[in-house]
Image 1 (cartoon, rainbow over the protein chains, first blue to last red):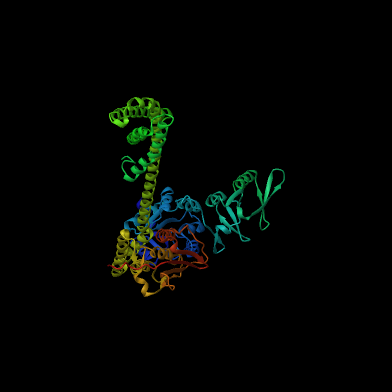
Image 2 (image 1 turned 90 degrees about the horizontal axis):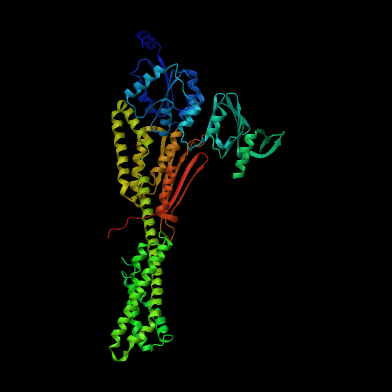
Length: 261
Length: 361
């Protein structure tokens, strides 16, 4: 690194946002960041909802993201704000074996509570060197990797305009792929989320949800009947009357599942 | 150790079983054999007693040729050889006894008369020995199953002990590291509070460590543990954590399994308070009721509020399962445990026998 770029970095402060629900934990992080004059604290959030609102407005360079928080956890926050490549993220956690393994695999920075000023400085240096060219894994993938392999998602978080919608898995009727998004149908409403249908499918318990078509995953409890449609394909009719296409492969999977029951 | 010789009661039973066998032999010698019955009795009595002990030797070949693992041919050859040898030895003994008795006046000429019974003795000797082989196999099997049962019991007791120890030793790493982080924060903000928190955390850890060996502590001790736990959490969550207690003072002396309440309060903090931005409350109520004529019982209720908008995030319930299992192990059907969510609150209710400290006498 040349002295010119050094100067440029000093002139342009790194704007950081702290997302942490515990007051003392926020204070110690602020105190330690105080030793780094190049870092300016642009905002603080005490819970996930605030973070989802504040972070896209402030567009910080650096985000300290606690994992265990009320309302939304760190992974859900990341899913909702979207992995912005211009933003470096440092996860903060006390203890979370599965998450740590995922962080190591995906080369994500993290701080373990309690952390030293040196450890924070190291994380800052890494973040600085990665600023602007850091590619995070897709947020949903990271969240899935941090989950225990035997655990499936119990809820899905979606941004509905400015509001955050939390859909319990049991209330998800079906999901439909729409380009880079999935449309999640729940209780007569649809919510769009930036995620591939395959990554959504892998987060759902295969006992309850089935990929019946390239573009559709359905909650098996909602299916009322199957009808033939055209020569080769079928259509699934849900309890609320919704008709979903069933591909040949999907029909095979559905049959196999019904036979097992 | 021989299963029959080793126990007097079994030996007597075994010898008694020889009486009907002897009677059959007596009948065979006296009537189809034509020996006068007094003479036959004089032969049969010592012969049966002698052969009863001969047959006990079947134990050794039985033990070295287990039924399950030995081949059929080996079984037959081993026991048949032994049977023929024993039977021959028995017949030779009969000859010797008859010869000895012949010297006495009432048994004159027995030595010649017994020669006619040699075939009978040889055949019955083989059959009786084989019967003894069967008996020994039965005894071996019984012993093996008793041994297996004992081992299984031991294993179960061991498993339960180690499970209990593991359940007790669970100090939540989240709690520990978050507390240390709070202390780290306080060192520069408020050194005195940092020190107080260190001491509170140490108190809690020391109390849980000390529980390893105990099977019961008083409710008062358990509450002290709960308070040191909550005082640490109170530093982390400040006024987000509110505890309301209503505890009947006379219940404090009752005995409960250690860490009965602490996991429930930890649960209430982890799933209630820590998920509520505006803070939450935890209610702890302990009372005892003594229905007329029945032993008195403890009723414990732990209640907390939850974020109604947020469905359960992670599969929790280790703490609850832990407490439920320990109640079951200790009291069986004599304790009840119910945990459920009612709208925006979570409620755990337990009822258990109110055990008092055994009076020192």
